[in-house]
Image 1 (tube, helix red, strand yellow):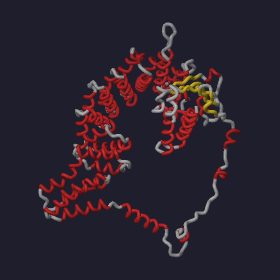
Image 2: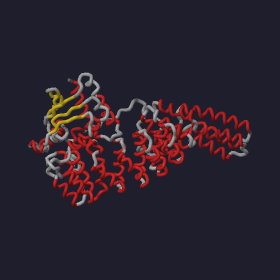
Image 3: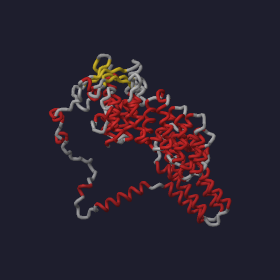
Image 4: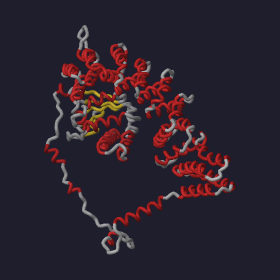
Length: 547
């Protein structure tokens, strides 16, 4: 099928783009998008893609769809084959998330650096849902990774001079003057003077006339005490505010709101009524209705405002606007606008911590969740009590968000509240708690972690939960936990049966976190284990302990 061949070629180009470009580079982003879109023409014709992997080919349905006879580090069949992959199955849905992770793994393995794990270990850690693979132990199969010969490398070398194109003379249209022709004349400007002129011209073209108009109106308002003049200026500023918002002039709107506050404090002979009318202008933008219109217009704009402009505007909003902003963040359709607004909202929340804590307990669910996320991102210790109250709610998503926020805060008081979540009925919440303990080394939770490892829940847990549980235990148990972990890794039952391979691999990683001599001794006893997952975990743990 040509679509399958094209998909593999596109994925190969995406791997090269991952190696060559930064992740914000347009070429990289375009390559990743094309890799995801390459699956769309395939799924209407088949329920899955099963590839047979050889050292030089990738076969589908018995036919070669990718043929790369050169066994180099850049050849996709050889990259998979040399680490033991013999069959690769892709299921519908892989293009949504997992194909990008697969591309990242292949690019990482191609570097062949000593500190990079082998392909099987990296695939095992990702816990793919739409990718299946069949592998063999290359050591038992007698196949060792081959190095590219010196001759092969020399054949691919190209003299850079062969790629260099001869310089071509630039031909200007008739009547156009080349500034280089006058560079050596007696009275020509020096480089510093030319740069000064360019900068002044740039400033002139970049100047914002609307901002100058706002400044002039506010100056007149301060100097003219005539009530009729001031009322007229307030009306002009009110109309100007609407026009600036409609045209997306956020920086000028922020300058207007800031200038109004200054004018209200400096204007001579200002009556209470005039002051109230003037200050009502920035207050209008902070009202939920006006703010909703602003956020909706931002979401529908084709061009993105500058982050600095949005920050300046949000800095002028009243504290009551924070709840309306949180409510709108979940409704935004444009992800780029969401990122800009989240940054600006974080600044506003950081300046109004008391309001942020109040919104954690808000009755509107989306507002509460967004306040919880902001509190965690800010590491707001003042929010610990409000976050703790959410841990008793029935809504699992709310409890999970509160647990993650407490983990981000990371104070002893916050971690103490997470201890009870080790036995929570929701798997994601248990994982969030144990990962927090692994990162923060909260030793008071050690007894609960050990009880979980010894209990029945370990057998029912998936790989992610097992890894987080053992990692947290290994991070804080010290030599006192070597005996338990050694028994799991190397011990046998009454009938000589060992623990599950995944559990033993997790125990090996925990011993690596301990890193003591007794822990390394237990690891070396399992270095020749017949289970490849256990051997890989042991080798990785020993490398980490040595480092």
